[in-house]
Structures are given as structure tokens and as C-alpha cells.
Image (cartoon, rainbow over all chains, first blue to last red; front, side, top):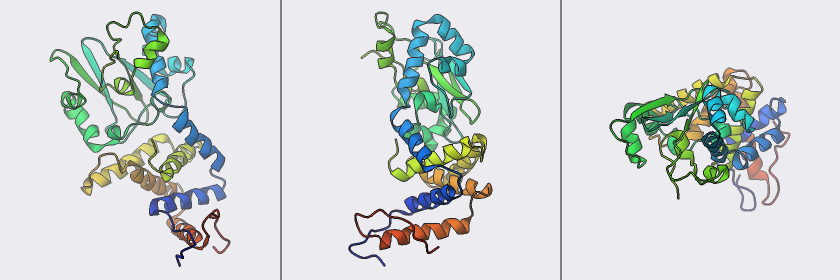
Length: 199
Length: 100
């Protein structure tokens, strides 16, 4: 029985995860140390800064951009990024005429090696359903109003193909070097719900 | 990124099991999508904040479907952990006993 000087069991969810993990560890199916390494990597090393470096490189290096649009997985690997959920990448380029938006209608497929783990809204039912039906309305809610003559293309990421948007380089950024460019590129611009702006 | 530690553990378990070939990521996505759809069908508000609960449910289900564990073992082990918390004094690490 619970007692004042003993510990109160944690939530049901915590107990369920501990149950599953301890059973799998005992069977030798997972290594707890490897789990810790993985979590540390996603909490501290992987995130949208990786994608920003890819985009910045594409903005300053035309040959790299061509490789990126032709074989995104290989071009991204050139910068040292790859692994789970980055195996089959496709990069879609925004232009003055075309705006690309990425969603995963089924669940939450997302290019982890370049963007980290998805934000909560990306995983929400409203975004997943409405991005396809009413992309302009969704973009408006993100504060992005597109002219009527801009074509909006919506890309549905899956377990097999994951999309990354190559946003437009903002006007007035000619003097910025690659590193400075990377610093202004946001996660949202690489999902396609924002444009890159200079601060 | 992870609101609570259990979310990180559940995340890592799914990734590792898939990396080690216990299921494909396509199978994982289908399992997760099915949990998300069930929640929508039940009329649960899905603003993304319950995402890892669905993730955990998908993980338990897929682990059982792949024969990595079974429902009985999960329930018994969960109770064993709860009991371990109850009998462990504050400040001591919680460990499973040998009783099960």
C-alpha cells in the first residue's frame, strides 16, 4: 500500500512504457544505453538548423542546388545529415509562381535528419486534414497571404517519401554569407507555412 | 520536444525496434495512423497534444502483433513496476523485485 515515506507510482503512461521497455530489454531486443543515445541525439543534435544549412548552401551554390533538387537524399548526405526518416528525401523549390506546402495526412511523417521532430501543430488533425482541402486558408492562419496567381502545391509525406521545401531566398540578402543566411532560415519556411524574412 | 520523459522513451523504442528490423517504418506509420484515426472516430479532440499517447498505443499494439511481447506480460509488468514504486522508500532507485 502507498505509504508516506514510499514513492507514489507515476502515471499510467509512464508505467506502460517502463513495462514494455523492461520486457524488451530482458529479451535482448533493445539496449537501454542505445535508447539514451538516441534520445540525446534528437533532443540536442538534430533540428531545423540542419535543414537551414542545406537551404543556405543551395542558395549560394548553384551546382549544389541542382544536386539537391535532383537527388535530395544524396545532396543532404554531403553535408553529413541522414539516417532515420531521411532515407528518401525530395526537395521542392518555391518560386515567385509556385508555393509548396508539406503535410502528412495519415500521421506525422517528417524529415527528421534535417528538421528534427515535428511541431505539435504538424501532428494535429486539423492541419493534417485541412492542408490538403484548404491550403490557402491554412497558410493565412500562419500569416502567409499568397497572391491569387501563385500556384500552391501540397505534398503529402509518407513513410516512403519525405518532403522538404526549398524556400525563396529573400530580397536584400545578397550581402549575407552562407552562415548568416542559415541563421535566418526557419523551420516553418522549410515546411512551407512561412517565407524566409530578413530580421 | 518531449513534454515528459515517457514520451522520449516511447519514441526511442519505436525507432530502435524498427532500425533493428522488428517492423518496417511503413508498418509503424500504418499502426500510428490507425491509432490517430481511431481517436478521431471516437470524437477525441486531436490538437496534437495527445500525440504520444497514440504513439504509445501503436507501439504496444505493434509489439504484440510482431510477437515481441503479449498483453498479459505487459499488464503483469506494469503492475510490478507500480508495486516497486510503492515499496521503495524516497530517495532510493526504483527497481523490480524478483517476485514475478
